[in-house]
Image (cartoon, rainbow, N blue to C red):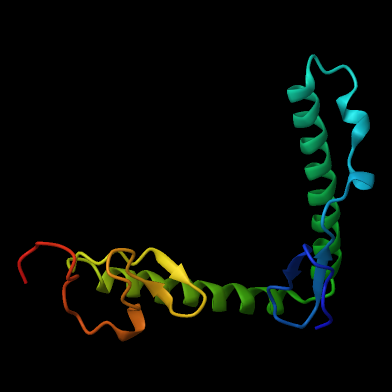
Length: 138
């Protein structure tokens, strides 16, 4: 995949066909400044401009994704949904397996994946022992 401009948001096709949409970072020239007209104060003006710009960006991204998804068959989309459902199920089961150990597995890192926010143990290295930072009985 070609590199996007720094600060861009990349949206990948859920079917994993290789397509992507890069939403460019916001810049002052692209802001919806006309939305500030009639604002009572600077705070309201900034809110109006931000909301209008965000709506326009979201609409453009949605239009690009919708146009692309129209190129896929229903079977492609159902297969992707099944794959995603399987991944959610695996994560749900993995989280259920960690209850009762006092580890807090909600802290994710790019290097280690799920880690305990209390002791720093990576879930992939966990062998069932309780968190050493708690006073719960083993």
